[in-house]
Each structure stands twice: as C-alpha cells, then as structure tokens.
Length: 262
Image (tube, rainbow, N blue to C red; front, side, top):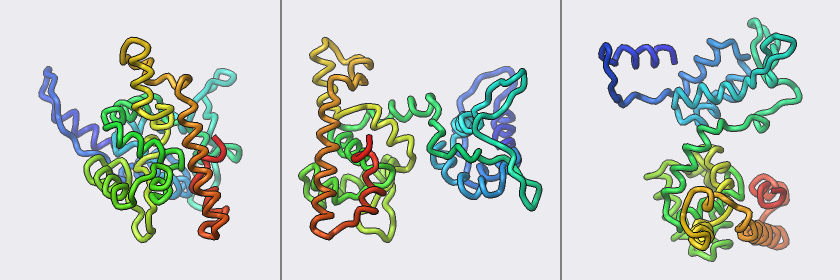
C-alpha cells in the first residue's frame, strides 16, 4: 500500500493537479498491510480476503475499513481500540478481535455504502428488483428461489445474473454449485436493503410527493409493506421446499437469514 501511494505521488507533476488511472490493490497487498500493522496471523488468514473484497481494492476504502475495524476511542486520555486486543502467538502475537466482537459487528464505512448506493441506483428497475430480492437472502443466494418469488423462467433469471456478473461485477457465480450465487461484496447487500423496496414503488412514491429527489427515493417508511411481502414470499418458498423434502432447515437458515429474522 505504501509503494502504491508513493508511486501515485511521484506520478504527479510538481505544482500541478492531474487525474490518473491507478491500479487497484490486490489481495496480497491487503494481507501485507495487515502484517505491517501487526495484525495477528489468524486475523490476516480469516479477514484479508474479505477486506479486499469489501473495499474492492480501493486504498482509500481499505483505510476507511481499517478505521471501522479498529474503532478508536479515547479512554482516560488514552487512545484505545473498542474492537481489538493484543493476542499472543508463537511468532509474537498481533491484533485480533476481542472475544465479544466479530466481523458482523463492524459496520461498512458510510462513504463506501454511499458510493455503492449511488452505483446501484443507476441500474434498471428490472435489475434492481432482482438484486433487492436476492439481497433479502443474504450475501449468498439461490437463483431458483428468485425464480419462484419473481415468477420468472429459470433461464431468464440466470441470463440476467450472468450479465450482472460479467458487465457489472456485482455478483459472482459460485462455481460447482447449481443455482448458487454470491454478491461480490456484503456492502452491496447493505446498500440494496437500505433502498428499502423496489425502484418502481419508490419512484411512484417520489412522483406522488412532487418529484424524484433523493430523500423521497430513499425513504422506506411508505414502502416497507412491499419489502415485508417479499420476506413472506421467500419464507413461503423455502418452507414449501422443507415440506417437500427438497431442502433442510439448516440450509434455509444459511441462505435466508434476512427473510426470517429481519
């Protein structure tokens, strides 16, 4: 990361401002940075890939994410981390999550959520409907469930998912698993759920309010019934699969934590 920043600064002509296309950080750069910051080897093994995926290799986003992970606070005039503690180890130890803290307790920085939301809102209403329904199933989702909930042909849904994977890089096909996909970043799931409902309903609500400003589109209070209806439809599909012996409760809880518990 330091070499990346040094290269960026050297590329700027003296006393001038310029715009450059810079290479994104790779996963190994994230792991090297965590090692440089003395994170525990087990932490690096568990979270380096996840942090790289969530930050999309963007050095600024990675820095913001590190700040969220550390969650610094002053206590008695001393700067401490609310999330991390020093864990001993064979090679000298390193920083790791406290026993009461896990990755799920770390909120994605507001700047990243805002950037992801802005990008998502450029998608078509049909793609938003598909992605928001998938987001209710979690980071990993079953395309066959989407087909039933949206009453769409499997081939149509798979083609749309393939296009979103190839052209938007927002989702990934889980190779070797039939109908299983995952979002490229959990931040996309958060951003989609924050939108609250389907774009068409949001736009209608905004137009009824006299415009299409951001506050009207992002206000979910008037459209939460739509989201609840999708929860019910997903739950109904999955429970029918259990009754038919096609799926176990364990798999349902893995795929549909949002649908059952949100």
